[in-house]
Length: 404
Image (tube, rainbow, N blue to C red):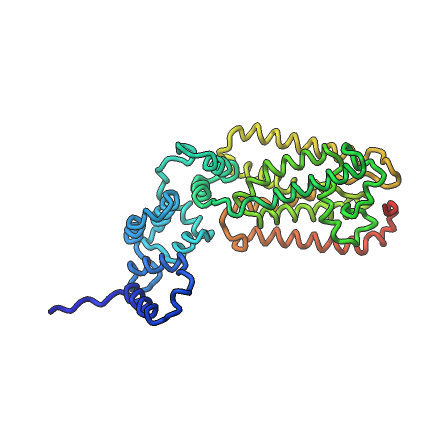
């Protein structure tokens, strides 16, 4: 009788695992193997030497034999990954990262520099989609400039978790506004009411030592006209961005814009209070508009030029309203009306940190050198503003309005 060939490492590992499971009575209580382990076993079948690489031909065979377990768009991306390797080898780590939705920057470069053109029809041309699928596709085309990213997002989005951050912030802002409107008996230009600045959420230069005010001022708005535009922009721009990039990243940009806005006022408009969420809103909208401009040919959203013009007009009108209100004679001198400088702080965050976040969908921000440059700049600004608030007001002998 001829000798049977020895089993490969993957087969031996599976047999050993089965033997251990039979001997271990607690095996049933253990959690199921991670999806990466399943793909590792399959990968090892084509990599008996355990080198961590297999040929692109074997990789194609692996994909074709398990195509029913893959989303069609993800399979297309994997094939593009195989064709992008000029050396004919596919790395296991790239493969398992891709299956785990951990897309490295090297993976994106491999796809973009690959010699394969995606030949299947665009996501926009697919028919027979239900309402939720059309919504996800619409969000993908509104926010992502590359077809391969749009397909990836369309396949991987599960609405779990939903875009809770922007919705929660918006509901809180509306709730606080209605509460103040009822208590002050005024909804238009609430800021002109003599008791408006007594609220403990408003940033006031005399109370700048109360650190929470640098953030909580977003829940106070000058009036319904101020709240209305901020809410519309938050929902129309912020919610789709959060659906694509997640609450952590979008919340980071939003909060960074809010804090930068109040700190900018404390440095550049030292005698003025601050209200409204314009710092955070302008950070998100500025980042989104800058991302569209920088990826103009790739962005496929409809009427993008017209819509950019409308967004810029709305932002300009809101900023003009804030400038007018700041220099309008105050209803309770000597305290001036709220500052407009927070808008500019938000824009600065949007075109720096915000753009890096939006341009790196599903990428590790810590791998981006620009991310660390802008984080360092933001940190330096925050530290400068903190020291400015501690020492500059005394050194300049500035006459501040009385506390509310």
